[in-house]
Image (cartoon, one colour):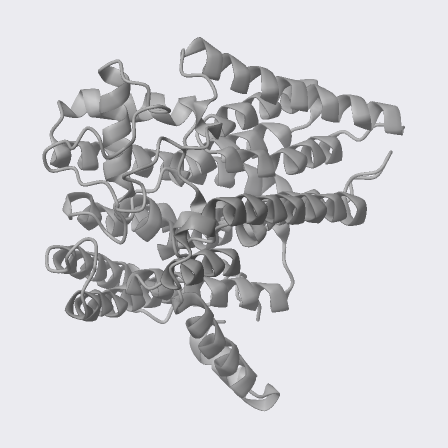
Length: 463
């Protein structure tokens, strides 16, 4: 039986609601632990306390796994699991403090591309140590969102955190709506798509708990996917415009551009290369126009590209490129860091570009042929995440809502569901090297499941 196919039955006598309640209890415990674990974790004791998160995060994964794709109300389960996290302190990340600080700068007439994040020193808002001496790396759209939330919060840190969580929960519901619409078009059972891509603890813990603004980014990408998938010039141009808007939130929105063109082409393929090139150019022009219009019209411009902006390489992550920088710091080679960081950033950019070219050549559309547009979409986003200068757990939320829509075979379903477990558990440890170690453990576990035992395992677990 396929991991993403509906199961013939739900073993929970409450029809799955018992597991929903279990997952909600796991979220309550996660929120309770957030009051105990220092942010950021610094000492050995801090990290030992942070290890407590493994228990409720594993429990939430179990609840998600057990309700399965046959559960009729996956979005309701998602909201119930997210609610306890609305009132907890910062979880796994201090990024939201940087958001609030930049919002204050915009509202008070300071240029976030000139003033460093450590200068304001707002009461109760401590910016992460890696970003104190840097200027903003976010495009204009994000800065406008930050300013709106700071204004609505009246400068109260707890209220700003709550408002960001409510915004991200709203974005999650927007993604759910878009996925539901698209699933019915591509022939994927709606509950399967919502269970695999929306109810997953990966989104709940990273968007609501960790408060990463990737929620806004993915909501815009999901809307672009929805309109592009209906085909025609309207779908193509509106999809391109939405990608341009996503670019004003995070630069990684560009990684979805090729996929949007491929989806629009698949819905209404033309007859020749000129038409394909023209549609790609039109979508790109729409994206550039929106991105430029918001950046210039807001008066904020393109200062995120300044040399003083924070670099993803500056933070330890699961990217081997970041390990090189951290090793140099450990060895006292601070003076040599700037040229090395520029070189590694260039290497990462070339690697991503090469991956995109390969995706287009191997899976892209042809005159009269749709190609494999979903592979282009997810591959483009994953290439940016895996080959870029940093690799963080929340980067996987870029593709999570759309995996089921690609109709992956059984092997790829197992790989993705295993990766979800690895990323959720590794993020809960707050140790950057956790993903490779947990990934090795999951790989070993799958290898231990011999063919004769796999059917029994699937019958018992629904995998």
